Length: 278
Image (cartoon, rainbow, N blue to C red; front, side):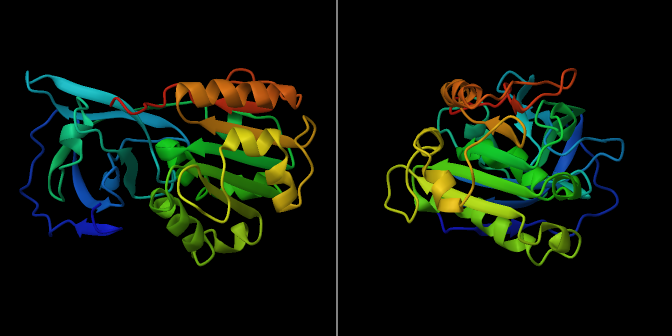
């Protein structure tokens, strides 16, 4: 495992530096959280406008000289001057086997056409908003947890995040803790955000999968909340295909209906999330 949270910052850029890749953006910071997880920040195209929770296509040139692109949720909020991404490392993954070695000053390809379903516009008004994620599925919620609109629209926001080991929760833990002192949204967040991290392999004060903690009612008991209901609760889901299918069934059992940008309802699922094969 690499040093937890080891960060590299970009050297000073010169005005003569010019992109060499198509739709190129420059890496400004890279943080390796574990031997399987890293985050990085890049410059933001001046023309890019997006809603917190959306994703874009990013990548590098493949061995054949053609762009190798994958969908990545933007982990930074819409107001940030840079773009942040959170990624898994796959040794033999077509993209991440290369992407995990980027350093400040390097370039990546970024297609500035954001899309996605994990946006506030796809949900009907409610009282509580649940963010349900596994692994790097946390990324869109890293954006939404820093979005002022999240706290203006809901009385409570619950971030449920499950990983195998404690170290894999570190990115999310540091982000959540930093929100209290954030000069822009700290007062908005207040005590509205409830963080419920769990592990499935390493002992931790909360354990178990998101699905198990929902169906057993443990998360409701631990947080002092009532079971989900369609009048008050809204949810966003991001994880593997199997996770998404399982959580969708659970939410429907609670009486919630899946929505979309064109048909706002009680919950939405990000179907473009890329899993371990990237």
